[in-house]
Amino acid sequence: MEHLSAHRRGLPSDTAAQVAAGEEGNGTMPISDAARQEVAALLPGSPSDLATTDPEFIELHQDFAFDEVLRHTSLSRVDRLTMQLGAIIAVGGQTEYRTMLGAALNGGVTPVVAKEVVYQTTAYVGAARSIDFLRITNEVLAERGVQLPLEGQSTTTPADRLAVGRATQSEIVGAGVVDGMYETAPADAVHVQEFLSGNCFGDYYTRTGLDVQRRELLTFAILVGLGGADAQVAGHVAMNRNVGNTRQDLLDVLTVLVPYVGYPRTLNGLAAINDGAPAGNGKEQA
Image (tube, rainbow, N blue to C red; front, side, top):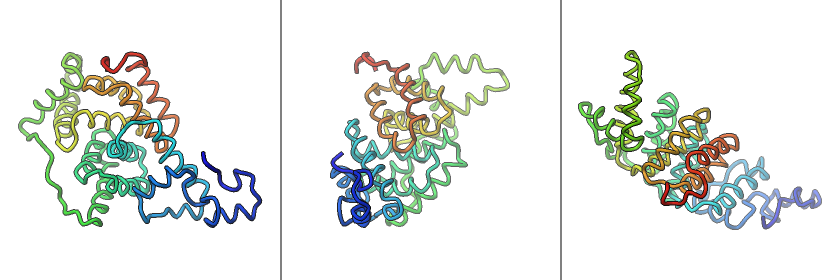
């Protein structure tokens, strides 16, 4: 770090007051130049009110999220923001989602991709949560003059969604795994497998707007952010490998989630990566 706030550097209290007032040492600004530049690019003219009430928190958060974390990932800005939006929805952070959606749109995420993030979360967090974020998304897009509805991205129909969804599921999960799930399902629970095939995969995974590799990385981010879904996180590590994503891709995504989902969820996600995509296997093994 280039410098710390006045109190953290042990400066006199009057100097600390100057820092908090922005008169010395960037007291209400990100600590590093890199963080300051990234925040300025993504959130121009949108200072947080926390910069006044909690300048040290803003310094710590922005320096970590917009500088230190970014030095450990190779994701593009668009992909990083896309994954973060999914995880923030899963966490349930409506205030931060509104802020980061603005950042994402400023950073090159298209309205279609932003909407696809919300749609994709529905299968994992449920409509009771995703609808709130869909409304926020619509409000932000309308404020920016985006005409709604956007062009539709659905590629299936009520008549073919189950068949196409199961085929898509088999490509991502593995045909043998999917067949086994149907074969071992009790007769009174087969409909749940059909829901997975027709709704989760037929309705959502087959949509355009995101390719299958990014959609699967997004699903990993959503599940990590959701917490309490360790088995599903592990399953989607395997699915990411099936669609061509690597251990490094997964680590890159997990890295940019840390500021928004916290360490317990991050460490659970890391354990799943280490189990399902062990270090040293090489990119060709992903």
